[in-house]
Image (cartoon, rainbow, N blue to C red; front, side, top):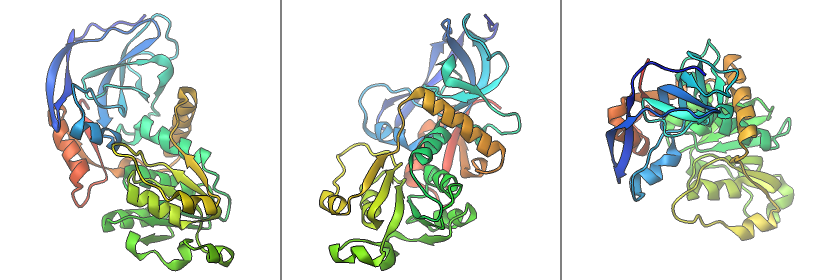
Length: 325
């Protein structure tokens, strides 16, 4: 077993009330036989944690998009050792150190920056696109162009659609989508009739999309995606929906005979395989992740990072908490 002779305590950001976090001194965790202790370098700020940051009761320890360095491994761990730079399915990452099962950790390619190597969101995108049956020559749209939507757009482009549309309310996001391979960008209120199938009598007219990918995580985007899919098309839900139940037009979905995919993945072994594939694609310059990280905050400023995610300054796409360089 590799052991650290470093500090015995660490700082951890803890969300203690709605919109309020504080730093707490914690004992440095000790890895079990199959665990890895990681010195966190950066941790991405994920929209899935925005709702609990705003409203959840009780203390919460956030951060699950970690890139860091191995500082100690358990006695049964092989293939990982200090000072390897790693990412993975690592939780409680808004801290100086984090523990993870060794099977949930993989090395980061040396050529990638920390910001380029956020493994968990990349794994979600690759999983979703592997499970979404985009065929060569399909007509596809990604609805919602935040960090996950712009990553999804790039992954969908690799599957060979003939037309790839990108849809968002923010002009800056639509312009970025063009840089990342969209064939056309649209504001949600300006969708042409040819991309909507909303009436039974229009089924034989070729309206709508083969695949609509909802990546915004809100009811309006999901409703629009449902309207845009053609008969027997695919609606892929990449957006993470939480809070109040989301109403859907089940009658519309039913008579169009849609295939609806919840693209979120819960098989850890598959997630890790998708993460490795995603890192290879980033390393091969097939997907650009680094340029999507637009804001960085310190561990003391986690609440500012969530506020930026909520309010979205003009140039905002993705923020990270930078803990060590």
